[in-house]
Image (cartoon, rainbow, N blue to C red):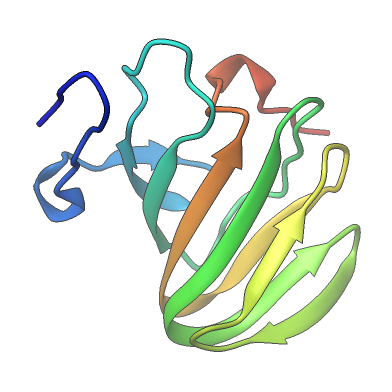
Length: 116
């Protein structure tokens, strides 16, 4: 639902799309003058390491436990762990039954997904 001053997204009703980390439900991607987007991501066990040249991402673990790999180093994560991933950091989430919120800033741009 959109008005002049706010937009509401129902994440569980947005169709999931494949992404390097698993399946993402992406909100606010159609906003004019996008500042950020919000993704609800179900992590797959074989998430692909990738990075962004312009975008910062904030991950918030909602469910499950696992690890986040950041520039080749793994760190344990569990619900309510938050991670800020700056441009150039090669990263991936590792875990089963893990669900995260991902906040890309600026708004997600599929042209800014890079793989080695």
